[in-house]
Amino acid sequence: MLELIRIELFKIFRKPRTFIAFLAITAIVGLIQMGFYVDGESYINFGMQALVDSFDVNGKVLNGYLLAYIILQTLLVHVPLLIALVSGDMISGEANMGTLRLLITKPVSRAKLISAKFLASSLYTLLLLIWMAIWALLISMLVFGTDDMIIMKSEVVTQILERDVMWRYFAAFGFAALAMVTVSSLAFFLSIFAENSIGPIIACMSIVIVFTILNTLNLPIFNTVKPYLFTSHMLGWKGFFDVKVNGDNEQIIGSVENLGAVMRSAAILFFHIVGFWIASIVVFKKKDIMS
Amino acid sequence: MDPVIEVEHLSKRFSDFTAVDDLSFTVNQGDVYGFLGQNGAGKSTTIRMLLTLIAPTAGSIRIFGKELQLRRNEILAKTGAVIERPDLYKYLSAKENLAVFARLSGIKPTNKALMLTLDEVGLADRADSKVRTFSQGMKQRLGIAVALVHDPTLIILDEPTNGLDPQGIADMRKLIISLSRDQGKTVVVSSHLLSEMEQVASRMIIIDKGRKMVEGEVKELLDPSHVMLDIETLDQQASMTWIKGSRWGDLPCQVHQGIIQLKLDRQDISAFSRELVNAGADIVAINPRNSLEEYFLKITGRDQYAGADQDRAF
Image (cartoon, rainbow over all chains, first blue to last red; front, side, top):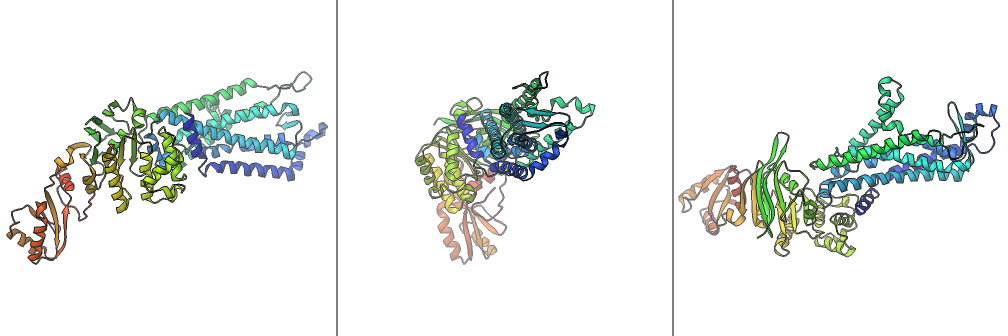
């Protein structure tokens, strides 16, 4: 199995399209960092206007931690497209090239072949997230420095102490990886039905967009299905930045306000991944290869 | 001879269309087994079932004495295949493609072994070139290398001469014969080039509309002593009159689309040609018509001449 995964990863990283996602993330993160480097102070001052009237704010509000949060919030909506570029091509691309029929004639079971491809596309997704973490978090920390992290939401302001931030990012990136692997799994599953990669990529993005729209519509008919849509849980990583406070309104170090909900979201995403994996194997085992 | 492939009552239906219908045949060890049939006759569907690309609707396939459905990996480890177009990873080099498929076949070849295989198909000097820069013929040769890299005992070639130039076709013919005679491998080959098939196949099956028409030794099925001549002359009417009045007049003879067709003993060809010239006929061409083609048309009930190429396709 390891050999099969190695072969699949080798093929993924020899395809030029694989690097589009890495380049895109580097470019977007770089642009955001440059924008904040040049004009970030005025942006933060504008956002903090109401806060500074009532509180004395000291230290670096615009620091690497805050910027990484902003980048994650912006990018995780668009990264699914970059992921679908590769995952949606895993089977359909082989069918389109005509190499799928040659693969099937090799002494490897279809279940193993699909699993190796599935795991390879998931690994690619994880690598993309690691790349994103390096650029969004580590480079931001180097350029903008570190301090306590202040997150402004519509009704509350959360201050997370500097020493309590880093583990939250590890957890958040872990959760984001789970969310992105879910998208990757969906694109992979769809790629089994097509003989060119455009179809699965567009279908995957359409599903993500439609589900996201359903999430935003507060109608009773949609509210019943929302808990089951994977898109409802994809932003669960933000939960790691909601902290508990004690009676003096001080942050409890290492706390997460609603850990249960975060873990439930993670479990739902995980079940989606396993579901798409099993469905991919079942469908592919029965498929006649006509390409 | 031990049977390598035993197919019994094999059928494949797609919705309301039956591509293969109750097909049974046996391929013996060391055979070069020709698979003949028109486009859409069910050749590729059958070959795809042999390679587990398509699941049969009914029937059984035993290869190396084992049920294909149950011992798939074991069987495919000893099988090499080229299926229609030799599609490979265009973004990888020839050597990388070969290495990928060798590893998928369960072997880890050294660089030397890969180069040796590429050398056998004449691609050693292009080992590091991306496949996207290859011509169709080069891709076909690389496809053959991929099929042979793990030293299989059964080789299945579906239209292996597609896209090859005359030299490539001749090389392919030599390779198939060598695989069978020198290395004792069993080769199943389908081709639309009947003359090619006639030259390489030791046994053959003709299928039509998914059903077996005939199966057996090529030598027994064909009548090598007689040949159908296609005679093209400037004065076809006069030539026909001469033939009818000559000592060849009793032989089966007809005119079809301006070409005289005469069936005669192979050893009489030179004598007949000489006499025709001496009779003053302006000969444009005399082509011995492919005996396999003749046989195929007879078997499939399409015994009507359809063109003038010697290597006529179905």
